[in-house]
Amino acid sequence: MSATAGKVLVDGVVEVNGEKAFALKFLQAREPSWVNRLFFAKYDRRATWLRDLVPAFGDKRFFFQEALDAIRKNKRQPAWGQIVAARKPVVLFGHVEWE
Image 1 (cartoon, rainbow, N blue to C red):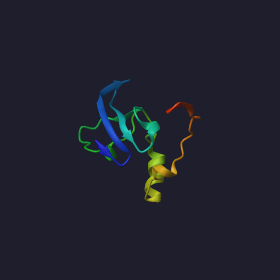
Image 2 (cartoon, helix red, strand yellow; image 1 turned 120 degrees about the vertical axis):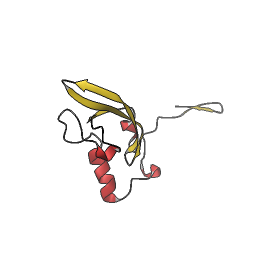
Image 3 (cartoon, rainbow, N blue to C red; image 1 turned 180 degrees about the vertical axis):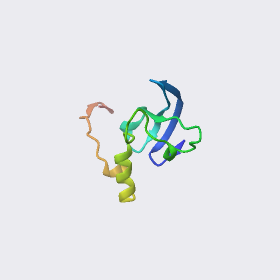
Image 4 (cartoon, one colour; image 1 turned 45 degrees about the vertical axis):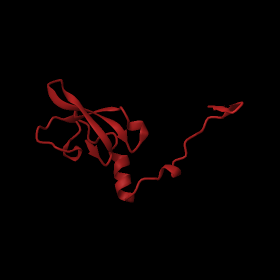
């Protein structure tokens, strides 16, 4: 499903210590470190959207919730050009660059 936080895969339903939950993970996300990170929501057969879900296993909030709240509060996300990633030094071998 597509959501403000990113594209979420509902990977299935699990049962842990008698509690049924959805197994979820981001396929794409606003924050690259969220991609492929597994998280769980309480099973709710009536839920139709990510915002309808509640964290499972006693968690108060989903791991991405604080960052998502900041995005909503600022009404925008930093543009890719504003996110400066550390670059590895480039080594030149003729016309080929290697990182």
